[in-house]
Length: 333
Length: 275
Image (cartoon, rainbow over all chains, first blue to last red; front, side, top):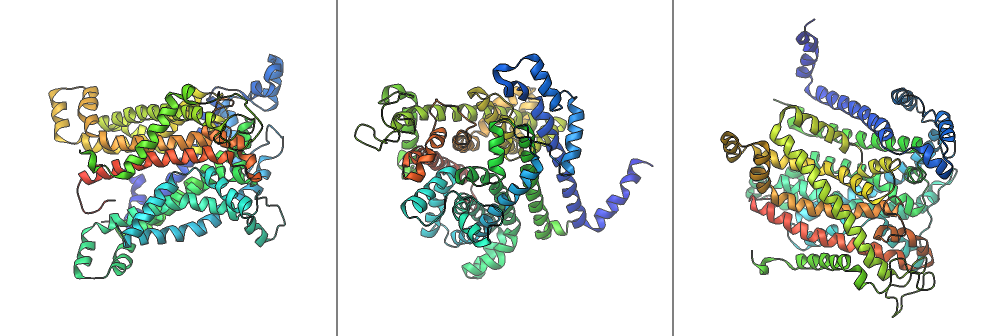
């Protein structure tokens, strides 16, 4: 078979179903990316200078003791062998045991990942509609008072570190006016409403941090659409402002807005790391930070891989939704 | 460019940046007490003697803030400078050579960007030794991916211009084309990006220090000071909020200036929108 005839079925497929082929290509790309990330997280990190055994033993690191620990943890195996074993186990959901505590990493992550996603989900539930709405409002009253106020406030909010927002909220809502709960502990068998109540402050922090970003990007995306020729036509036809935005601008701005939302959801996933530490919330972020402090590599690699997977998956979803939402990509010439 | 045309917000931003710079440069002369000097009770409230009160070990917060400005700004500035040098050199090489060099560098850059910066930093810092040069290099390498993307996009626009082709036909080498033809024509968007990255570096180093993985005690830095004093919050002691506010104010100031720079460069391009 010649190379051309090998590709012919795919070429025919992509002619007939351009949308499906586009999506398929994007899916494939994500898997390649994910595989490359595992190589980076495992081989890249292990190739860096620094050795757990020496760090762990500290002053008492005799050559024999170091060799003992290294063989106990399997560190004396060749790098490639360890990578293949690690990848094989990771795909089947087994991340090995923590070096520090000896407990199963997967078990810990199972509990904590749910907590983190719970937090991120409620933050997204509040932040997405609010920021898209405010973004539309800012465009509607562009260069007038509401837009300027939103612009200045969001510029300020973008600059605030997550932990400052978090402690400020604690100061106001726990110390000065005791209405909220701190620390935000959750445990198994806690009923839903109490759980919601205890994550109120971390959710508020995440919303405040993400809101400004998302709103500014929404505003920019819509204004970009607004400056195109068909918008000028609609304006000159004498349609009123809100109608132009909803009927003409919004459908075309959908793809960029979806992109903005996904990008910020991905940002939320990272934002949980700091927010969990501030509110002493038992999630993945806290687990990872603790593991980094004691250099517990299996935990760090597992958490890193999961965060990266979620991030890549969100970006992929955004791209696929953008392909579906964009008529020009749906029917390529 | 007349001074009158500069809006008030930019003056506010500049003032903030200059105050921070003065603190950073002249810290040992301005600070009333030493960086690690214990001068009184733990978490003593603000008084005439101690402007912001004392911290969790009885050190003067104002003095540590001033010394902290030095550490935080120094690390952030070095990291930004390094990340710019790295990102711009790489992106310009990619944009002028095209071909497989461009392809390889761009794909590698995409790969680096597919892991969130903070997560990547945590993974890498789990093995590397904890000291300031390592911290600066890690921050710079991770941040250079963003610079690379912008630099490549901007340089590609310029690289297809007639004057670049003229230079090539004259027989100038790659280094000349990059330094004398492309760099001067991409300076203004890159300058705005420098400010943006600097603001981000301040936030990033503070976040890492807050997580206990950045600058190590007893050196004072703003993120680390928040970490030191966070346990006081629940007792109504605002010691942790002072450095937090300083980070916020400085970043806002930098952003005010950058926002204006960005608007100026985009208005030069003309067009109906100001996106």
